[in-house]
Length: 187
Image 1 (cartoon, rainbow, N blue to C red):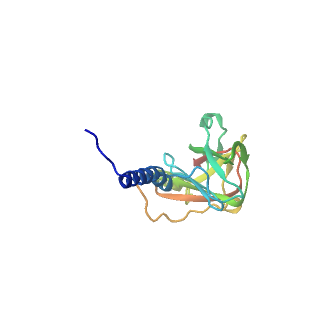
Image 2 (image 1 turned 135 degrees about the vertical axis):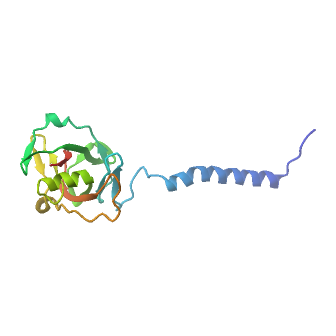
Image 3 (image 1 turned 60 degrees about the vertical axis):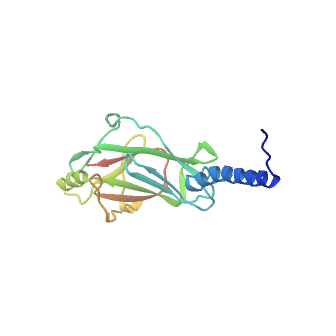
């Protein structure tokens, strides 16, 4: 038994097949993350396990935020803040590299990059035990801890409209220079 298929039916089938193939590739691409950032668009990289967000405005070229390992806290010399050895925990270590060459680190930012760093209710209580309004943050410069300050780094503690069981609030920091420091909190 032989089935006759008209040319019109073959044409409709071919068009439907092409449309299905286009939809399979275009819909996920439209919804998913782009491989190359669009010119002028900031890069926002979230690290959900640490609740840290890094935003890098367009720098004249596309960049990528990369997470790096950091040494154990015991290998980094503590400093004293409010009579307490600081820091009590390391959050994260990130660098920014050119998107087209991940070996080429970007260390100067104009406009500045922004870090959104979380703190918990326990962090807040610990800070208040040392007569501080908020937890403090800093970074390891390879030799010593450097406190992040309002004057140097535009450190702000905006109100958190929706605290969660894990996060009581966030600190935001703007940096014009960043190379490879681990970020920590305390006291």
